[in-house]
Length: 318
Ligand SMILES: C[S@@+](CC[C@H](N)C(=O)[O-])C[C@H]1O[C@@H](n2cnc3c(N)ncnc32)[C@H](O)[C@@H]1O
Image 1 (cartoon, protein in one colour):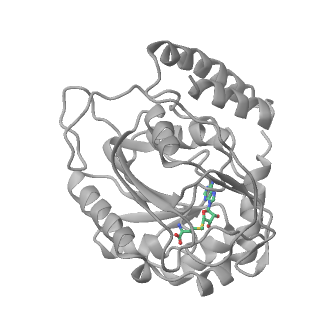
Image 2: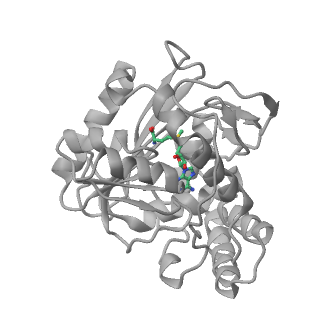
């Protein structure tokens, strides 16, 4: 299947801006205190939750990956951008960094003790987020934790410049409740949320969510939380084993406007679609039916980007 165009734009843009990103975006030590506290709390939870490394998905130049490693976590990084991965490997030669996409992770089911998605999902069009979060659910071990942090809002941004360079990616800022709903629909249990107003270097509202993959209805959850009966995964299950939607990592240049500081892209339109939560039982049944047809599309390999996106959206919308 052809690589979706948004992934190409993100990869090319971040290849273009990689060096400027490192120059312009402050290091983790200069993050606001609450964001640092969320990272520290996440690190403590995954350290105590059990085995399994943490994947920093959309790791960029690897600074947050290294920050987690400094907090005693076994962490590695994955990013779409070969340039970013090159910078990360150069700066942190003792850590593992690989090229890849969070839309189809090259990882086994239940492999990870934790996932960090730190300012890395806002370039994903909303209709693709269910597929991304299904990958999070598939690859997390039962009891494993997710820390998601990113901008929130209700806007689609189409910047032409990011970090002082031309970029072609877009950014999709969604209301926090919608992100919670999408994570829950993927079978993850959201256990904590932090929403922050713009302040300091961060010019937009931003938020963190902590979630975990349930261990099952009868077992205590990890991540320091009591277990809630877990929702079944909606469509996880080994897409990467079938090699679908693999990202070809040919080098390309690119840039963006999403870091924790820097560029302020131009709002162009809103994305007001809301996802009611919790879904009715009927919606869950519908999801499973749609999920089967989605798998069929994936298996065909010939399905177009829009067909896949439409099926994903159907599978996850009540
Ligand atoms: C704003 S940067 C954040 C980098 C890093 N998390 C940090 O906080 O320094 C966003 C990163 O996410 C990566 N990214 C975006 N979409 C991705 C995807 N589908 N799979 C992997 N990486 C992705 C980009 O290549 C970029 O390096």
